[in-house]
Amino acid sequence: MNWYRHNRLYTLVLVLVLLFGVLIEIQNPVRDSLRAGTRSVAAVAWVAVHGMGNTIDRYGGLSSRAKLATENQKLREEIARLESLSLHNDILRSENATLRGMFSLRAAYPEGIAAPVLSNPSASPYSTFVIGSGTEEGIKAGAYVVSAPRVAIGRIVEADAHTALVGLFSAPDKETEVMIGKVRTMYRGKGDGNGIVVVPRGAAVALGDAAVLSGRPFAIGFVGIIQSKPEDAETTVLVRVPANLPSLSFVYIIPE
Amino acid sequence: MIRAFIVGLSFASVLFAPPWLPLIGAGMLTVRFRAWEVIALGALIDLLYVPPGGFFGIPIPATLTAFILLAGFEPIRRKLLV
Image 1 (cartoon, one colour):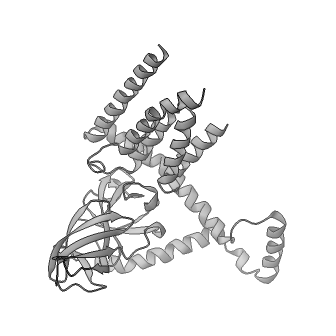
Image 2: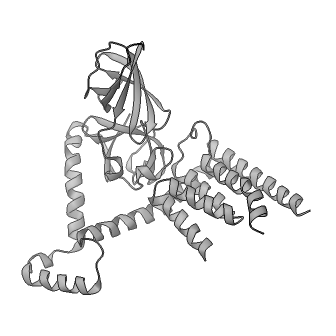
Image 3: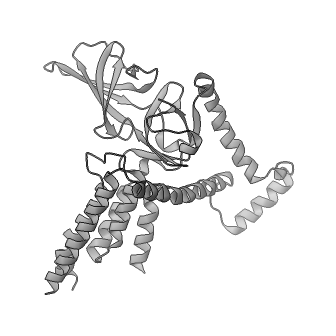
């Protein structure tokens, strides 16, 4: 009897899970609200942790109380002038330096928008990450996400009011048409910022060549390893994203 | 107490840690308990990160994985943990 009751319970839960799947799959306002609300709540946690991380980095990590008191006394005596700078200004300066790096992108693409990265790309099992700008800031699905001048790492796949989801080109089994030199081929993502392309044996592909999006001035990676066997008619090329994805703090969004 | 700790750690790791950490947490919970909160854990992952069109065509892979873990470990829970 117990077994029968448990089986009915699992069946009921399975039905609820499948209904949840249908709700997520079909475009509807409930799904959009649920996702936007979840990301908004998560954004609060991400921003709070980023702030705490900056604080820990600023003061050189966790220390004992006595050690901090001694260090504080030393700093007060030796660098009295620097004590007038607030922690908030230091963090703003650090963010400012990152944004200044984006300025060169701004010059090239004035229509673009700089957006903060909220979630760690390695936290998602689907090669996606969340940014802190959305439709209210002018972000639309399909826009290119650029981490450095002429290097695109993904596209906006979904945009809420104040957050958006970025899908990486290197997502597992995602295919993107690229050009490597004069060779047109399909880039297939393998996750973790890597992907492979297969080109005809003898194609003019060399280490360091850029894999450029077809019809767009953006590279999505650079040739890292070329694997070729004499008996094969094709050559397998490993393409790497030239960005340390977990360390990204800002990205630049360029409309499609 | 332990259950609450693992649940809290798993939910926090969804936001900040690689995906294998919440997976291990879910596994530990479902082996020991009939932990329905694991399904909520999977749903959170899917609500936050799954792209439109799903992952390999599956709209809620993490939620389904959580359910499979929960239901799949039921015989183990009954046999080993009387």
